[in-house]
Length: 67
Image 1: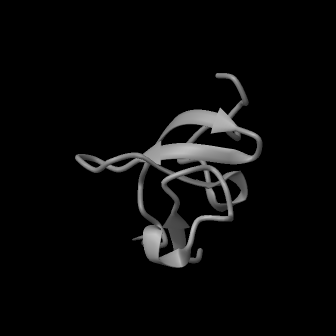
Image 2: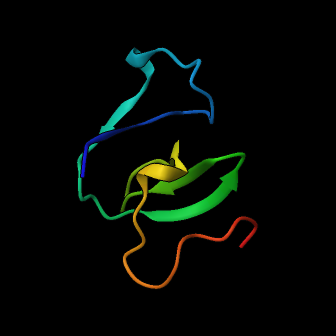
Image 3: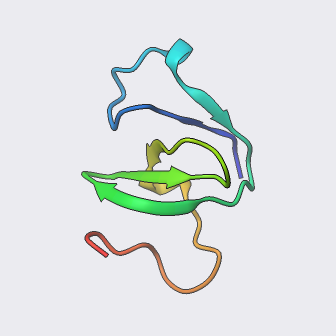
């Protein structure tokens, strides 16, 4: 597991200064799917976007697009 950055928008064009760190092993809830990006939210925090390959399901299968 590696730390990841939460992006305010689903694009790699966002400057690093506008991202927020997400610790490795953090538990998040997937809210939306968009072109290889997942909008996730931590408890009590604003949602952010990460690449879908950085998420490991806690149980069950991989997140389904459009679910």
